[in-house]
Length: 128
Image (cartoon, rainbow, N blue to C red; front, side, top):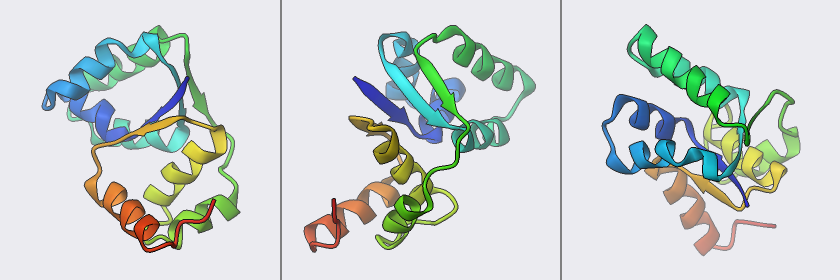
């Protein structure tokens, strides 16, 4: 089962500010994971210390079933998520990426992202 993990989960797990995120990173090797390069960049930019950045790269290297995807997400998929009200430079890319790679789950603590998609799905604006 393929999953996609948003940057906040890596940040909270490495910073140890959210127990669920810490546990997710602890068991990461169990999952097949795909993340876009955008997530890697965002995590590195938001970690507070050089040691945390090193820990993040060790985590990536130590998880053989984790794939960092460098290819650009198709613009039409990003546009689809942007029409749902998600930021075209961040959240829409993550949502589109998860769909593009066929992820079964997107793990995120971004309430704005989840609320925007859920609200538009309820109103019938989410097309598949």
